[in-house]
Image (cartoon, rainbow, N blue to C red; front, side, top):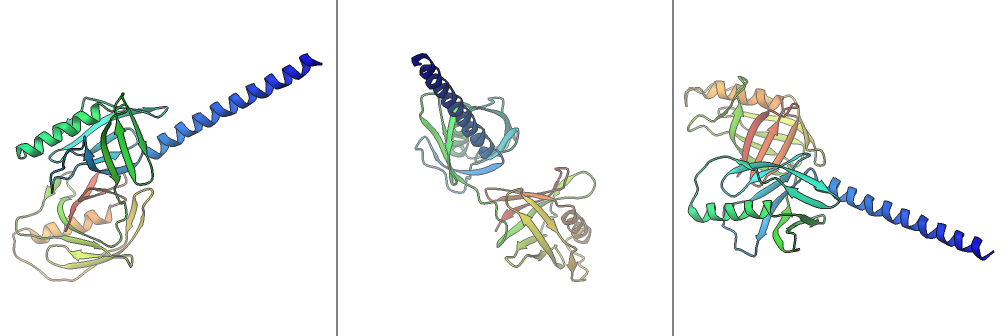
Length: 262
């Protein structure tokens, strides 16, 4: 009789242990899923003061991290395992030169990334930590809402497998209205179109574009550029806000338009 009771109690303990382990695994998996496909803006780096107008960003994609270190764009691979985060030290970056304080802060940021072993996050904040539990960097979540935002175009896909800067003295703009209307200047003519977007999946669909019908002779090439821009808008399927930059991409991931806030 006593043996029977003992076996029943032992089975109950084992059952509870299995449930606890399953719950623990579920929490780790949820944490991993939550971190992916998120975007962040740095607000604290080892308690160092940040440099005004030198935004540092972090985008956690499905298999890589990208962003801006305050001067250059960077990207690298990372791995997540049971709540542990490892960021590959083999980081690729553009090679722009910036003022020395900006470069020093960028180097400190990259060092913080590669020293990261774990993290904690909630709906609005991400903290990266080293093996000793010391906070290396703290971020606030980047808004992914494009409604009610205004942008100036910097580069466009010219339809010839190249993304090119704008012609000197030309200005193109895009305003995503709260009424579901996209409008702006295409360089010569004003344009308007409807748009729909999904914050979670970062999908956006731009409807047929209507524009005024002026002809502009200057700057040289502005009309061809306008055609390329409007055609690029028609290919847009996804978007990403990275600090003060907005990338519009095609369904296969090619850049269509790059804009900055204004």
